[in-house]
Amino acid sequence: MSPRLFWFAVLSALALAGAVRAEPTALTVMTYNLRFASETPPNAWPARRPLVRDVVRRLAPDVLGTQEGLYPQLKDIAADLPGYAWIGLGREGGSRGEFMAVFYRTDRLEPVAFDHFWLSDTPETIGSATWGNRYKRMVTWVRFRVRDSGAEFYFWNTHFDHEVPLAREKSAALLKRRVAEVAGSTPVLLVGDFNSPAGENPAYSLLTDGDFFQDAWTRAQHRTGEGLGTFNDFGKTPQGGTRIDWILFRGPWESESAEIATDKTGTQYPSDHYPVAARLRLR
Image 1 (spheres, rainbow, N blue to C red):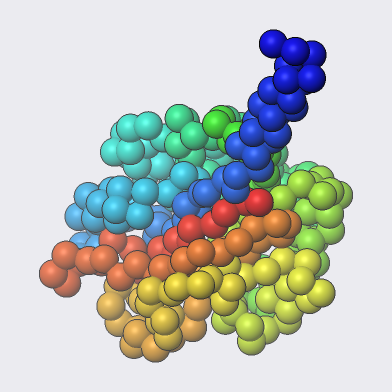
Image 2: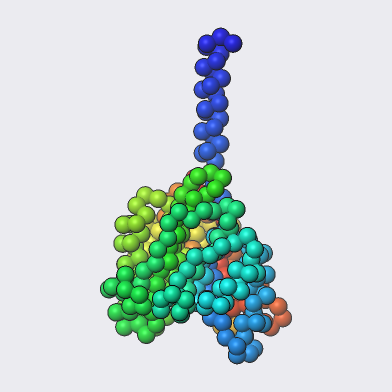
């Protein structure tokens, strides 16, 4: 082979490799307020557990943020979802209290860093609450590497207060500052139960102003469950409620599709919230 043909072949191979690496990374992302485990019928955890398993398996998320899960409940879910691992911490510290757990497919994603902080004036203090809210609120974040492409992104999971609007607004402001400090220019996914209607409250505006975050639901090319609220109260709330469970993104993501999943069996709902899933591509 002549030197000219040799270098042409080398450059062509490099260009092809670059094109392969440039292919967008597709991920299915999900957020789900599980409703904490209770033994009280008709919505006791043993009755709901198989329904939670089934809806998660159907939606098949690569990464899932759960809210309200208790430690034994999360262990049940992990046992029901082979192929997933999870990261989390109880909001009272250790295994105590509700978790902002992050489940992920081990064949697709590798965690390279994670941390937790509390939504308060003293974020590093375990169990802190300083904005008038009765219940402790927190964030768990994980930095992931996609195994097949090497791309990295942050996944942040939270649960805002349901009673105090000021606490939600301060939570949004703190979260926005922390994302800027920790993630920098790395792509970010933010999921959770924000206890606020998307598009209609200051907390949402704080997070989305200037496209700091974008809403995977409104940006989706295709939506399933249009017009549904995500809090169903085990079937007591009319379906035309508000969307308080969000998937937001920051960085070069494209939202292909989004779904509010209304799976149930007879009159049994898996949770008092509907899960939300989105199919995203990271350019």
